[in-house]
Structure formats: C-alpha cells, structure tokens
Length: 469
Image (cartoon, rainbow, N blue to C red; front, top):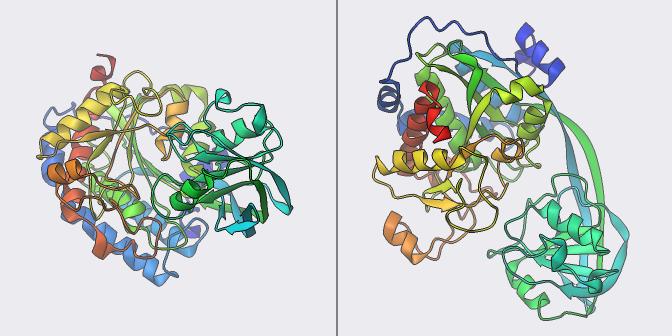
C-alpha cells in the first residue's frame, strides 16, 4: 500500500479518514441508455479475470488477503491501479483496526469440557468466571432484548442462540442483566468461527457449535465456567474509494464490497467475488460517465474484523457529506458454489429478524429483484441483520440494498428446485476456510449478479427519484 500514499489526494484522505467528493464536470448529458449499455459491456468473464488476480495475490502472500497482511495491501494496490487507469479520482483513506487474538479458551458445564472459541473483542477471563447455566429461548431473537432475561441471569453464564441481532447486542444485553459470561450457540452446523462483537465486550463470550448448543440447552442450571486469555493490537489498513468526475456531488450513489479475506484462506468468494464484480463494473463505467448523480465505489478493508473499514468511513464523514449519500448498494459473496439468489429485505416483507431499512430501501430491493428477474432468476429476501458493510449506512439512515448468494446456511429443497444446486447442503461449504478458492466459484451466479448490480447502479446514477415512491 505504501506506493499509493504519495498522491496528494490520498494524503488528504488519510488526514480526514474519508474521501472528499470529486468536483462535477459532467460535460455530457445523462444518457438514458446507460443501464442497458453498462450491462452489455460488463461480463462475468471480466469479473472472473479480476478474481484470478486476487487468487494469484493470495497465493503469492501466504495464502490470504487478510487485514494488515501483504496480501491485502497487494489487493488494494491492484484495485486502485485499475481504477486510476479507468479515469477515476481515487483515495486510500487509512483505517486503524484493533486485531484480537484469543487463547486458552475453556468452557466447562457440569465439569464436562465443551469445545468453544472466543468471540472477537471478548474481554479476557484468565482465572475464569463461573455461574449456573441459564438457557434463554433458542430462537432467532435469542438474547436480543432485555425482556429475554429474568433475575436468573444475574451472576449466571447465559446460553443464547445465534440469530438476527448482532453478537455484541446479545452480550451487552446479557451483561446489563447481570450475567458473568455468554455462550453463543451456532444456528447452523459446525463451529462458530470468526465471530466478533464488533467492539470491546462487557463480559467474556464464547461460541459453540449447533450440536453442542443443542446439548447445553438441556443442561439448564448446571455449573458452568468460562475462561480465556486475549490480546488486542492496533493495525493500520486502508479502504480504496473511487468517485466519478461527472455527476452531482451533492447526490452520490455508493456501492461497495469488502476486499479483505479471513486469515484462514484467500477469500475468493468471500469477498473476492463482490470486489471483482464491482471492479469490472467500474472499469466499464469509466471515470467520467454520462450520469446525473456522482457514483462512488468502495472496497472496504477490515470487514472480517468487525466491519471496521466501512464503519470508520461512514462515521468519519462530515455531516454535509453524509447527507449527500443517496443510497448504498452492497455486494458480498455473490458467487457461492451452491448459489442462492438473495436480495436484502428492505421493506421487511419477509417478517424475519430486523425491521425494514431506511425509506428508499424497499425501492432498492424491488429494483434488484427486477434486475435479477431480467436474467432469469427469482430472488428471495434476506434479512438486514447487520452482518455486512451496509450496517454503518443503515445506522446512518441511508437507504441500503444488496445481493448475496449464501454462506454457511443450508439450501432448502424448495430453493434447490428454484435455483438448482444441492438441497440440504451449505450455500458455501468453504465459507471462511482455506478452500475458498477460485475453482469453487459459481461463474453463472457471478455473471448474473454482476449484471444485476450494474443495472441497478446505472439506473440510480441517472435518477434516484424512484427511492421516494
């Protein structure tokens, strides 16, 4: 990344933590044919070529592109170079991230050890904390609200189920109820790995597999002990942010994808796929397209450590610049090997988990659903559960939407009939693993989602009037 930091624009971005809007030159009138033209020019093959480069970078740098690693820096260099060559104004704002390393994680219930892993940013408990095991309702909203707790939670180790609200919320609510520790059971098969509280937690928190969580749920009242050691360090990383030189900087259409992987692997689906699709669209769009609204494209750093890059960016924007953001589109894991086709549920019509997004989110959902329908796919909704980079925009009241092809969750028989693939198998069996490599990518899903994102981005670049309908 050092090679990117010499430019005056990058230096200014480092000083403020965000990218200043580019001035509008807009020599051409907005072109109503832009959406169709961009879809025609943008291809899955083009996105795949960027994925090949991200795979090569990971292979050359220890097998990953994680925050603070040479693999991430090389990925950011590659993206920024392609954007500058396409005529964009590019900045590389710095992000300071707390990395977290846990050790000696121990959970015992009734004297029996249980395999457990610390949730990122959990406070340490080297000498252990103990209390009776209190089992909350094991449903999708387990532990999300103060009303989930009773006086039994005081001085107890509380078992909750992974679900619709953030891990940090579950832990804080439990701590407020007097719990001494929290155990989070996975809602899908396998261990609960790479989970994070997002900010330093109030009480120690460990994650366990769904099977172990099911067993622990039958052991309410048993004595439980939680112990772990932990170390946090500061790491400096970057976002890559590009903006068109045309379009109104007072009305900015933003699209983003996280560029970092987990340390365990190269992250080619998670989230090389979204990053590559966005870069393909950017290169085809060019830095001075015939648009009415400015277009800002972002490749976020440190998503995997708690959405740090996007959160720092949004919270660091001066209020007038934040008000200029018309909407945010997110692309995260868009080529899963056993792909589903999901669009974030902006209107909460599915009545699952979190409520609707800010006004305009429903219109974005409808547009993305229509764009996928135009390539032959009937999309389903997925909850705005805050697990990706749209979360900071959502919290700021900015309309959000996005596409997703599934992670560790299992594809239902009905979904397999609608989309193909294997029922009762994970959408991405290599989620957060070393096998998340380019040979696992669903190239049909990559192509379809790249087209849908291009169509939606270009449509709103011409007009955001539909957000108000």
